[in-house]
Image (cartoon, rainbow, N blue to C red; front, side):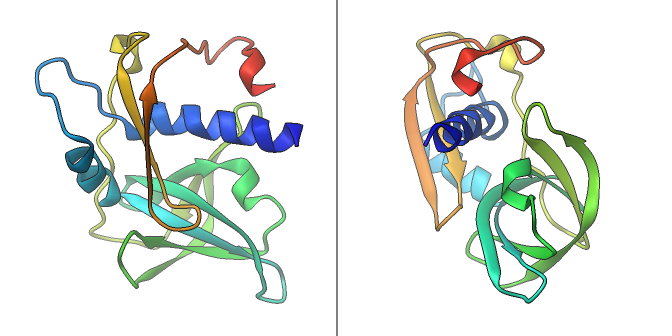
Length: 162
C-alpha cells in the first residue's frame, strides 16, 4: 500500500509539473487544457515475454520520438507500445534514452513521426494555492483538478514521495 501511495503521489506531482501549463496572462478552462494535453498523452501497454499484459500507464510525447513516463510503469516488461488518446495507431517502444531511478522517471524511444510534443510550463512560476490539472491515461482518459499545495524540491528530499 505504501508503494502504491508513493507511486500515486509521485505520478500526481509529475502530472502537475509536466502536463500543466501555468500562465499568468491567459487563463485556460479545464476543457482547453485537456484538449491540448490529449494531443500528446499516451496510454502505455507493457507486456511480458509471452505477450501478456503486464502493466498500463500514462506518458506524453516530449519529442517526436520520445515519451516521458514513470519508471515503475515499464519495469519488468519485455516489450510494450504507446497509443495516443483517441487514436488506434500503436507506437512500439524501442528502448529508452534517459532514466532517473531516484525520481521514477524514464524517457522512452519510439518509432513515431508527426506527433505533437506537449508544451511544458515553467514550474518556477507555480505558486501555492493555484489551481492545477493533471492529465493521464492509465486506464482510460482522466483529468484531475486541485490546488497546488506544496513546493517540491526535486533535487532534495521530499517525504511525500518516499
